[in-house]
Amino acid sequence: MRSMSVAETTEAQANIGVVGLAVMGSNLARNLASREGNRVAVYNRSWEKTEALLEEHPEADFVAAKDYKEFAASLQRPRTALIMVKAGAATDAVITELTEVFEPGDIIVDGGNALFTDTIRREATVRETGINFVGAGISGGEEGALKGPSIMPGGSAEAWETLGPILKSIAAVADGEPCVTHIGTDGAGHFVKMVHNGIEYADMQLIAEAYDLIRRGTGKSTDEIADIFEEWNKGELESYLIEITAEVLRQKDAKTGQPLVDVIRDEAGAKGTGAWTVQTALDLGVPVSGIAEAVFARSLSSSRASRNAAANLPGPDEEFDVADPDAFIEDVRLALFASKIVAYSQGFDEIVAGAIQYDWDINLGEVARIWKAGCIIRAQFLGRITQAYLDDPKLGSLLTAPYFTDAIAKAQASWRRVVVAAARTGIPSPAFSSSLAYYDGLRAERLPAALIQGQRDFFGAHTYKRMDADGTFHTLWSGDRSEVHAEDLH
Ligand code: NBP
Image 1 (cartoon, rainbow, N blue to C red):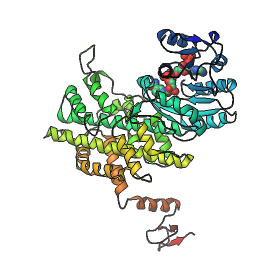
Image 2 (cartoon, protein in one colour; image 1 turned 120 degrees about the vertical axis):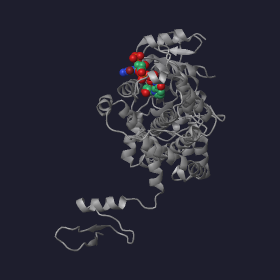
Image 3 (cartoon, rainbow, N blue to C red; image 1 turned 60 degrees about the vertical axis):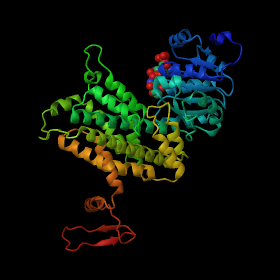
Image 4 (cartoon, rainbow, N blue to C red; image 1 turned 90 degrees about the vertical axis):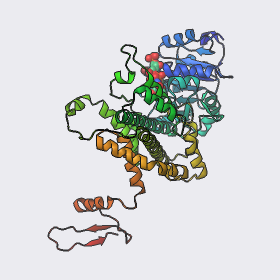
């Protein structure tokens, strides 16, 4: 169908509009236009991108606007616009423009990677105009945007009524259901998307550690390790990230013929959503150590100057000499699975804490369900999480759900062997080992935190609680008093 500019049309014709036609926006606009019943208004600050989209995709039913006024005029009421611009100041600028041409009842959706606290702020500001504002996390990158992403919208229930069918029409599908659900009010969608990205960091780091241990422990080639990952992808580790890892490992460099992974600099980049997940977890007091280690591991990798300066620091004398490579590889697989369960459990703990803090009613089983397709952490494994919350909606830690308890029970001997082998031979495995430490900390009957409470009370009179009595106590520690007194401060 031929695309039109608004000047050629006489009435509002589009049921959805997209502002921002870079990689994500143009692919989402094409995805929207490809679905029955949708007519898509498109606008980009610079006309070149709009023009390129129209020229390259004459098959799509777009109504192109040259300014915000034309864009608003091309939309049926309630007007619905999806913003896909660079997160931050650009989003605020577009919101300001749209609120000037939209009316009460219309809907502005920010599909960019906004920080959830920005979304909370924006929702409150836009709500005053009577316009609905929805922050929607969208995962899946360029391909997901075109073929079907996983979508995590927040915002009001009223906005969801109009928006729901449109988002369902473009989302990925898992088990016959679209990978989108109304997450909760205001910033809930972007919060959940942020945690999704944090889990993604942990998942990637764990896979990288598994690869490193196998390569250095067994001397297998990248092609052989690709075969191992392909095999793993047929079992409980089945996931998009395991699948693409095999492909990345198999890739040869066009210039040298070497495995591409050996040519790429070992300095991992980051765009910040992993750091947000950890910063937010620190504020909420939720231990997300697997995610934090993954973020820090990227920082360490890109600290080139420090790494150069430390290159000659002494390591262990012990060689990494694996006697039974097949048994070791199976140990690594199980260690990866156990650590992955910990990372997801920590991520869901953060969502629970966020929901309490910000008063969101988030269905955790639904969150796992909409991550089953379209997004980067998509995996069959997520079905187990959905089931765990269906079986027990009040479930505390995911680790206590029978399936996961069982999986870790089966994996833990391997997990411990791998962490010991890595420590003895000096192979960094921060995510494997911190996940194991978290697991042991969580299940410990008694932790050395009692000593920390003693230290705190000693230097700062921070008080402590006793095992054998209610109330808060402070001890008059040493000094010139010969006796130690405890007094109930209440
Ligand atoms: P970019 O993040 O590269 O942003 C480029 C777009 O922002 C262009 O359309 C540009 O218009 C527009 N823009 C800017 Br910059 N400043 C503007 C302003 N003041 N007013 C209006 N428009 C402005 O695009 P992207 O990679 O497609 O990502 C879009 C959003 O989706 C981001 O928030 C991103 O974080 C998120 N996201 C990306 C991915 C991914 O895989 N890339 C995945 C998931 C989410 P111009 O053409 O006139 O310069």
